[in-house]
Structure formats: structure tokens, C-alpha cells
Image (cartoon, rainbow, N blue to C red; front, side):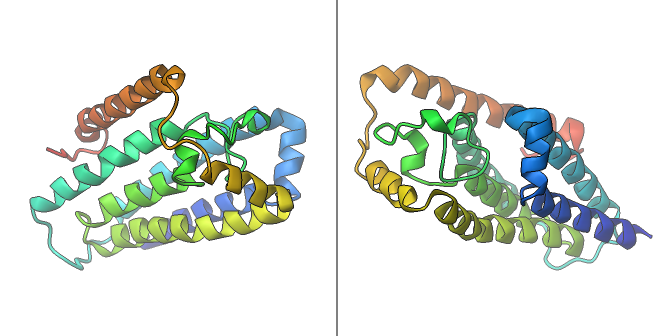
Length: 221
């Protein structure tokens, strides 16, 4: 039965992510609960199903693919720090190139922030998180979970690019050209926001280290 629950959680997770963002489902939901309501619903549902999936992976029969070693935890920490910083730099930021952008009509291609370096920072965060947790979890169930998430994130970058190209038409390339020509170093007026976001990312990193053993029973240090 443990494998049955694992497979079911797996299917529900990917079905919920693929169905909710497709027309006519997403426009139907947005028309009734608004774009912010849809984003909140999507995030809450995603986190709930993700928690179910990880719990189901922990309950599945243990089939070792590779052994655990202490150095693997250091790799996890090394990848999670940039993942937290990237998340802090991208959350609640206008981003017409990817999903989940907030207030995209206010996007300034002359000052794109993290979007200058990656059009899909949230997918990059997911890929880093998945790869960080794949190495120290060498059993079959967890390898399937984290390996699939990494592949999903990397494949999703191409998929979202194709969808946004169709949605924005010629405007997609015009925006991209302006973003690529923007300043590498932000103007001093943006330094305070930059420091704030970096501080949030570092704080999140240490909060996850502290909460990880309390929530999941596994220490990262």
C-alpha cells in the first residue's frame, strides 16, 4: 500500500501543476478568485501536495540506489544557499517571461534585476532544491521524487519559454533584447532593495537549517 500512496501522490502533484495553469482552467479560476487569489491557491495547493508526496516517499519501502555519506550534506548546503538567495531575489517581482510574475505591467526592462540573469528564477530555484536533495537521498522513492523535480524544472524552462513566446508575440523578443542590454550593476537607488532581498535570502537559508530537523527529523549540519 505504501507504493500505491506514493504513486498516487506523484500523479496528483504533477496533474495539479499541469492542469491548473492550462486554459481554460486558469482563466476560469482567475475570473472567479482574481490573479492574487489564484496565485495563493496555487502555492498553498502545491505546498500541501508536495508535503504529502515527500511524506509518502518516506513511507515507501527502502530500496537503496547509493549509500549516504557525510559529505553529501555539505553539497546540499552549498546548493541551498544560492537557491534561497535566488528565491529572495525573484519572489513578488514583475516577470513577464515566466509564470507567477506579480504586476507584470510594471516590469521595467531597463532595471530587470535577477531577470537579467535568468528568465525563470523560480524554476531555477526548484532545480537547485531538487538537485541539492537528490544526492543525500539515495533510495528509489526519493530519487524518483527529486530527480523528477529537477527534470520538471529544466524541461519547464523550455516549455514556459514556448508558451510565453506565443502569448507575447513579437513583444517577447523586444523585451528580451532590452533586458540583455540593461545595466549589469544596478543604480545606487536600488542598493537598499538589493541588500534587503539578500538579507531575506540568507535569513531563509538559516531558518531552513534550524527548521529542517524539527519538521523532517533530519539535521543538515
